[in-house]
Image (cartoon, rainbow, N blue to C red; front, side, top):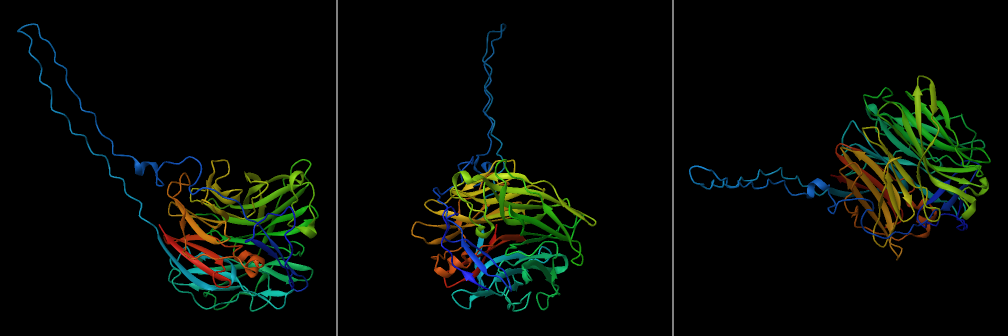
Amino acid sequence: MKIGFPRRPRGLIARGLAGLVVASIGIGSLVLAAASAATLATATPSGPAPSSPLSAAASMPPPTSSTPTATATPIATPPPTATPTPSPIAPTPGPTPTPIPAPSVRESFVAAGSEPTVSADPFNPGVVAVISQNVYARSLTSGCSQPSVRISSDGGATWGPATFPWGQQCQDMHAVIAWGPNSRLWAGDAVGVPGGVAMAVTYTDNLGASWTGRYVEHFTQPWSGCYPSLTVDNRPDSPNFGTIYVAYNWLPNAYGPGVALMASHTGATWYHAEVKVATLTGYPYAWRIGYRIEAAPDGTAVVSYYQSSLHWWDQNNMFGEGSGSNIGSRGFETARVHFEGTHLWADAPAHAVSVDHASASWQSQLAIADSGQVWLAVENGVGISVGSPGATWQKLKVAGKSCFKPSLAIGGGVMFVGWHAEDPDGKVWTYYTLSYDGGATFLPPALATSATWYPNSVADHVNGVGLRENADFAGGTFYYVYGDARSDLGVYVATVTP
């Protein structure tokens, strides 16, 4: 397996931290491409917001009553006598606003590694798992990844030893995990097959002591990409409770990657579907990447992804979108996924939000509220845009820093957004914010950790240390996982309890 350190091509997104690794296992090579840095400006979220970072109601004084005064009334007989003025009526005090307590934030070191994903067991508070890619270089031109899982049973305070879903074999470096009912932990990644790589799924029922034999899909032809996303329907009231959904990319033709879907009710039998491509007239090529998938309360799922509609695209230079007139549009799309019995299908994709042609990247995070409302956090030019398709979007900024790589989670009536920011000196910071009013307003950005770090050659070229990082919620706590290079390549989790 080869690791290449390519020059940043003209027209690519210029981010020094987030790169993508595409692995061709067994016969292929790891092609590493850097993605870019956006330019940001202010310290508070843009868009309509009250002067206080809390809700508008929390800053309003209690209502008061006006003081009535009776006017003297003349009487004809006997001679006029002034009517006495009644005493003022004391105002009735309104309810005292309940202040929002400061969140509790704690960071823990998980393991050496990069590109982590976190999942919190929704049925066992405090049980959390992190998978990371343990990439090592065998030479200047070749390398390998051994994805490993570590599990915490005390809410991220301590972490158990590494367990390897695919053994200590050389695999792709985009592995993901998700808890399901009965503490079953699912893991997905690409594995080497003749002709390239293919999507593979496995699981453990005993906290990683052993893993089942992997299921390797045969629905799509092998390619050098996969970049999967995996979720489980964990809502007991859902008609598809316990169903596993997977989204991954592949190359059906020269016009761009496909959005492949897999689903299974039990993990024994799997079904496949594709999301249709929607392109602009005159822009027949569609570059799609960064897939995310989440289960919805009604038994469906939603898949989201970045797409640029292009005049021309070269599969041998897959990250080259070109610039100017070659780009018809750049943005994010969503598609509703249905799974009934043995029939899996996806609705036509819908546009969610456009992003800046010059400086935005394709990193995003998808979350679905208990109400069924779909939310996205995306990189967008000079900030992190957070919103719901068809609704108003908020832009989060940090003064003097370029923000990138957003993570998003919703739970307990609170919305969490985490991201990184790079200052003009090149130092990287890690921030988060919370919304207590359904995304209408956000608290001022706060540091998730006091640690900062500078990108180095290893961190730059091996996936920018945190390509698949995300956030999850369970038991009243948000778990935000990220990679950084404060001491070589490391994986950390910040627990944020509102």
